[in-house]
Length: 169
Image (tube, rainbow, N blue to C red; front, side, top):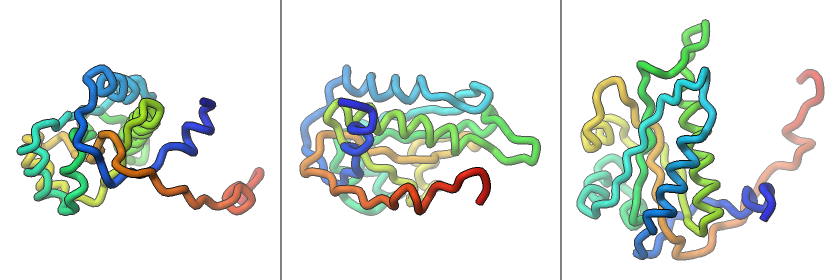
């Protein structure tokens, strides 16, 4: 399949089968994140793989919807704020670096027939506590991973002529 076909195929999955994800596929998804580019090649990420059902249930304190705990795996993508690159105006680029890495992971998962969904609307302090994160490591994304129980919904995207400007705004 072409890259654009893969991008069109990927969708947010919120219903997972209980089937376990093969270690080989999980490692491919993690490798895709590892290979992502980052500002100044700092690679400020840590990926915490939560497979244990009790631990996934505990994460429910940080994000209430039940479907997150249905996924056989949740990957917590975290940023080491001490090692992330800062622009001259002080903007920390760790979130951007993590977004690139997680996007690589979601596309790899889709290619392997797995489903994912970006979860950013969680309670970061609760996630930090449950994951045992030190103060300088920030949870950025919770990424459930598993075999979809249903097809993803088609994406409604704006046409190019609404989002592209040439030369100036």
